[in-house]
Length: 278
Length: 291
Image (cartoon, rainbow over all chains, first blue to last red; front, side, top):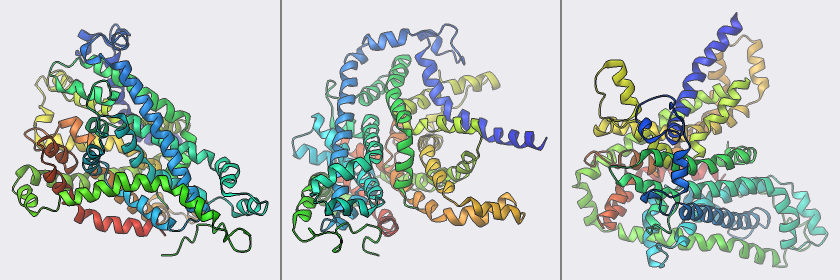
């Protein structure tokens, strides 16, 4: 009896948590699966669920969607570039600071940390001006480099925390065997750091795929922008086709969800424990 | 501050015959160079340029005469004080819930992370649509229950601001719950077992074991969350667009508004106004994290 009461009390928390999490997501799914007329009737499940909206979206059959495939491709390329570049910059820096103990490493670490504390929307404005100065505005490099800048401080921080935990003896043994710095990096550091590198790469990739503000500021032409900006453009009209917007939203949200679940183990271990030192 | 106490000195004199050959430092410099370039080109220069744009005293006079700026400043403070603290408090409580070993709580935990993992634009637009006064699902339910038309949610600045906070909490609560859960799971189980033997209640366990172990983490997370929240453009912009009548701006969206008006100086000045709040937080965080 006590057990049942205890379980019921847990459900009293669990059910609201479930509803709170699921309702906006469910609402999105519901619209994606509803025929246009039925979408606005406030039903909890459409009478005739349909994949017609997906057909319309994938077929680019609305003037809002003219460049959909192109924009999806842009999102993908930009996210991959950000993931790889961040990984490269951050891994190299973490290795130099933590294992090679490069001079000034501490200062560089502190610079990265300070950058991490600058709110993203605040850095967006000066960066927008800088990109204009560099002549990068409205090129995808602007967004890629901006996102790498946003992602690297945290990436370096997480990787450095993880690198500091590697046992010294491994490096020492390699050094005694005559390993050079690049050999140490390739044969000792990278294999041991692989899980953290997966976490950091995934983090940067998701950050770039999900970004709206920077994409919207730095890229303006329809053929250059990402899916996020394309979705935002729906907002500018009064007669927005909401069922298509929600369908595109589902398509846009699925890859990051899938990637997150695939790499969840790495993310949970490194991003949560590394993000805030306890 | 200890000098890199936990940074293992790799090239200790005893172990490394190559300590002084210079190669290590050379490689080290080469490997931090990419980050240094990124930092100088995309942080240092823009921020310096921003300071330069924001140093004009007349811009500050002008924004302090702009009622929209003053409103945005108040909104930002309210956002930080109410939304962040409410979120962190709920995250602290929920981290306890998710620490309970039950199969269904574990599955719920997998679902619970979704708002954080998926992009904000489609989900916030989903919120926005649910709140639409004419065909949004919330007002339809409202009508079915009361036979009256529901409020025009986003047309009231206070309601709209509160809903932006709800959206912000919805989006970022999972991340902080996860971190606080990690903190909770790191507490030694023996402490709880010993307390149970002594007949401590759950509240006593929380007050004497959980909270003292997590207090520092909680404070650090709260401050970090304030930085992130200051930079949260999406929750407000995508839900209300700053409206109605520019009454729901926060500093993050106000900057963009000034840019649209082609007033970069005002945009920078409005951001600079957050510095007095941010600096002490930054100093505190640097001290906490770079130990």
